[in-house]
Image (cartoon, rainbow over all chains, first blue to last red; front, side, top):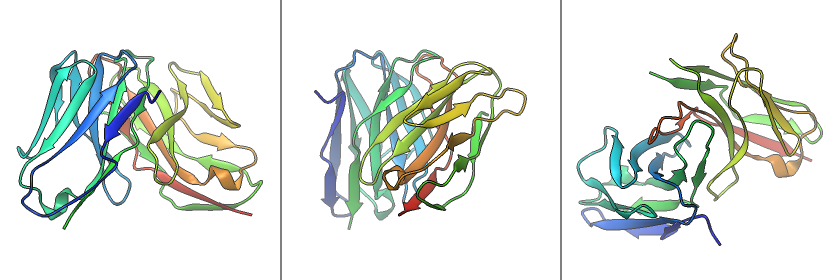
Length: 113
Length: 113
């Protein structure tokens, strides 16, 4: 069983479209995250949810909206996609405690054309 | 704020060479430290971790020691293999609920036979 799964793995779409990426974890963790990895491999935290409550909301355009229907799911919805949104988006989950690492999904490669 | 600095890549080595990837951190508290590895086309996997000063994390021949006095967590391996070719990320966590891992910029390692 995959611990953190996100879909789709690849997403190619046109500018201006709205798209969603889904993420599910079966590890029983309280905390889930969305990270963005740019073309230089730099990882930047976008959002963090703890027990369905938004904890971190970094400087991300309002076009990005996370939704956590329950502790095991954290979806990312993106409105009015722009070329600069092209990146790999990673979902992760972690226990939130000091000694607990984060577990990452396989990533979603988003290409906006 | 907290930050992680790791050596710029790419690092190119021959098989069986010794590897060191430097990582230093800035933190207000006493973070946990991690090394993650990302193989091509995959998500991040935890390689090793250390949660307090002088702890040594080790896995698959890699090791790193948490040095509070030098605020460092350098990754080492005595003899690299072609299969170690990947991007390596140093990261820290304050460990408060909902806080995210803070990553360095990643170091690409390429090992040739």
